[in-house]
Amino acid sequence: MTPAVARVSSPASFLALVPHLLECTPRRSLVLVPFANGRSLGAMRVDLPPDDPATLESVASTVIGMACKVTDTDAVAAIVYAEDALSAGTTLPHRALIDALLSRAGICGLAVIDALVVGADGWDSYLLPSADGPRPPTEIIVAEPSEPELSLGADQFSAAALPAVDPADVATVARLLTDVDAARGRPRDRKRLSPSRRAEADEVARLLGDPPVLFEKTISGPSVDVGWPRLAAVAFCLERPALRDVALMQWAADLATGDAVLHAQTAFSAGEPFPADLARPMWGEGGRPDADRLRRALDLCRCVAATVAPDRRTGALSACAWLAWAQGRSSHAAVYAEAALGIDDQHGLSAIMMSLLDAGRLPEWVFERPTSPGGRGSSRGSRGR
Image 1 (cartoon, helix red, strand yellow):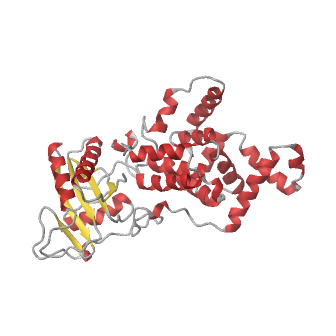
Image 2 (cartoon, rainbow, N blue to C red; image 1 turned 180 degrees about the vertical axis):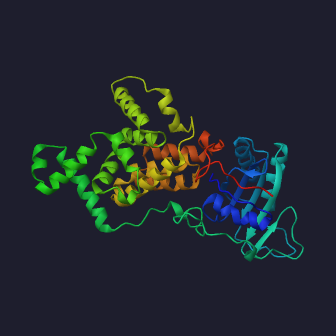
Image 3 (cartoon, rainbow, N blue to C red; image 1 turned 135 degrees about the vertical axis):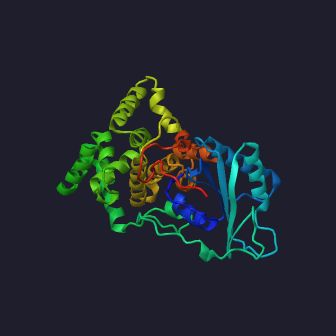
């Protein structure tokens, strides 16, 4: 769930706010916005379900249940994004879904601020439908985001697409990874490398000497400034589950945590039990990670996945899936996990992520209200009508 701040005074202005809450304009989706004391607590999106009573009841129960888990929720607003036209004099599309949702909200003691639908030809309210047909879409004016990397016109899946990279860059990283394997292998393989390639491989190997330091430095600035040796070193680590998990737990916390997890992984391989407190965040338990760290780490892993050869992407894609999931972005997490399983249908973390996503499970911290003031991922909310 992505908080934003704005005052809304009408249904149209509320609809204009929703893309900012989600950082996209959803398509064929149900969006639920939980509120506490008139302030929005973010937004959650699910795909529109099939139109059969059992499924609708299940989805309504699940979505309202998730809203109830958000700290202090006392009201909700629902928006259906449909592809249908909202013709005058006919039943609004997905009415049965909204009825199920309103019923479940009432059972759970949640007030309903509004229930709206956005269609191909305009918008309307399920609670107070217009007698003259849908309201014009021009009433919904979505302001341009202040963050240049956001594209509010894109749908919920667009941001999960890997960045475009130059084929020459892919070749560079592939060569570095091949040379690192050679330099770390048999002496005769190392000797076959030219002096310049051996030096580059040695630089990558040097970075691999202290993985937590490597992981910390790679998210300290833009991923485009990481540099090929460091990017190749991260790619090398993400291919190895133990080091990948060190990276994820460190990016969710700090350098000291990375050191502790690396030590615990080494001890575990020698037969010692893995400390439960270090493993809890992997399953979404524990304190809320820093949102900016997770964003930077996801940007880095997306860059790695786009730059390595397709058959070496599973580690980076699974890291993307976990980092997206840790931010409450289930749709994006599913895209990454499915892409990894398309390469290796037995890939461990990707299969685990799909199990969590299929069960509708999100990290505990997603449902907590942030307390840090200001900035993206902060506690700022929108003022309800």
